[in-house]
Image (cartoon, rainbow, N blue to C red; front, side):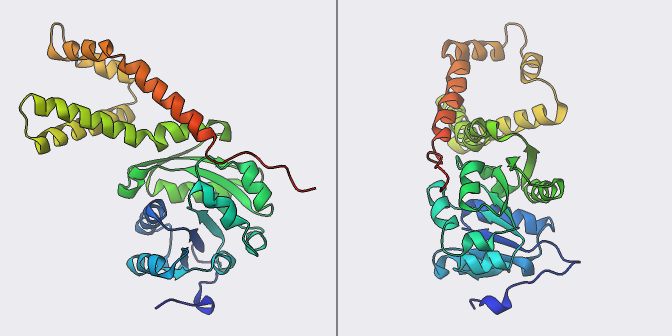
Amino acid sequence: DHRDLHSFPTRRSSDLDTVAILGCGTMGQAILGGALKAGVFDPSHVTVTGRRAERVQPVADRFGVTATTDNVAAVKASETIILCVKPQLAKQVLTAPGLAQALDGKLLVSICAGTRLSQLRSWVPGAYLVRAMPNTPSVIGAGMTVLSPGEGATDDAIARVQRIFDAVGRCRVLDEQYLDAVTALSGSGPAFACVIIEALADGGVMMGLPRDVAVELAAQSVLGAGRLVLETGTHPAALKDSVTTPAGCTIAGLLTMEDGRIRSTLARTIQEATLVAKGLGGPDEEPAS
């Protein structure tokens, strides 16, 4: 059943963090599931929220956490708050009556693409802020997340957030100036990679492979190449050269790719996506006088 406020978790010094996830859609559930599996969260200390009880309660039942439609109550009961709503809803959620006051002295982690620390600060001036840019492979524990801490976020707070996102993949910390490019490259990158996988599979089908086989071969090849780069630390060009033999099929294929200007096309893809990411959060607002 839907739990009311008096049953919300309270903090004891020996406990893990009390956590509220505001807006528990695909990414919120990925973060929640990974952190629970890794033992970073205790389900009895987690509250998830949504606009409609019939949408959020099944999430709570699945993970064994508390559900509510009351963001203020969830924030009051928690130390770490993860904002997982769409960027265009961030201001509406954070400026709702009582929420800024409830966030005073709390750690707010925003995964809202394009919503800048300065904007968050104007809406919730008393919170400690960290921006996070995860991506969809977090759903299977293969995500890439970049964190950008706001002024006043302590090393301990940043380490707490890193533990959360380490549970769903890789995580690193960068200055906020890089976040729009991060959003384009690793945030949108899985979609771009899926187009490449699909195109490679289409080539396999054209040459006679069954569709399911072609997709499997293409996807595993891309996955393996990525792991080689990450686990060996070898430059992608060196790995490419190591399998490119004279007069072989690989060099023939590579030259065909170059004929199609694939390098500049992919690089420009990231450039264009970065420009769009810059506008997702809307314009900065003048502080109230």
